[in-house]
Amino acid sequence: MLGAIVGDIVGSRFEFNNYRSKDFELFTPECRVTDDSIMTLAIAKAIMGARGIKETRAGGAGDAEVEYYAVAGRLAVKYMQEIGRKYPDCGYGGRFIRWVFSDDPQPYNSFGNGAAMRISPVGFAAGAEEEVVRLSRAVTAVTHNHPEGIKGAEAVAMAIFMARKGCSKEEIRDRIAKDYYALDFTIDEIRDTYMFDETCQGSVPQAIEAFLEAESFEDTIRTAISVGGDSDTIAAIAGSIAEAYYSVPEEIKDKALTYLDSELRGIFDEWHLFIRC
Image (cartoon, rainbow, N blue to C red; front, side):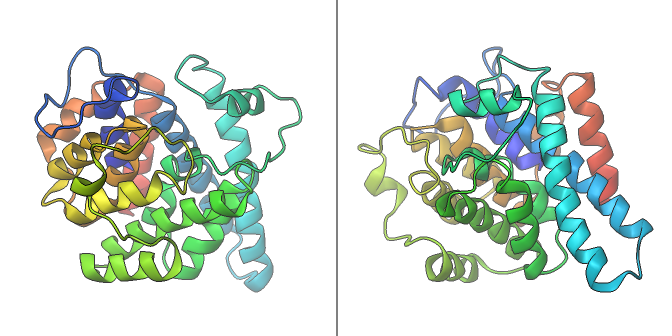
């Protein structure tokens, strides 16, 4: 999850002012936390809550499993609304902000990349591929219930899970190409012509490719920014996978966390303890 937060913060100043190079200062006063980080933290809080309920009802066999995913979905709605309403100016899309403030929040058939930008906690929490798929769907379909939205979120969560489990980049590339997206381009080939695209299918493959081509966590963030387009989200997605593969350098972690206010930092700290248990 930290990798997504880093990518979001670093990319925030480039979202509408693309910089198609890898040579830039990572953190500046113009950087900020956007909806990418805020919704990622909301999903993390939902997963922690659902896991707690699951553990208190251990031994319930199949019914407990079904309830776990149902509760995760309900808590995703609860916390995305509860936390999201406190940050109304953080960069939400038009339909999503209406959902956040709705008294009757319903999925709206979206395939926007918001599904993928917030999904990283699933990749870090899941214990098996089946859980990656089911938990990803549970927390995604509450808003982004279009097949492309569900696919985009699952592809990112699966890449994170595989990186956590020690898979090579070649194995991750093969799995993504087989089950999700044709990675038939390089970042150099698309850098000069890639346009702003807020869909999963138009930004998730680019983010994954940025990770696959990079040589370190920091290089992943720089490569993702250099693509252009929806820079904070592409960097958040790429950074979330890079965290699982490389880990986040301490100096980058420490600087990024200074951008979180006390409430967001509290959720992050709670997650940090949760994921280490």
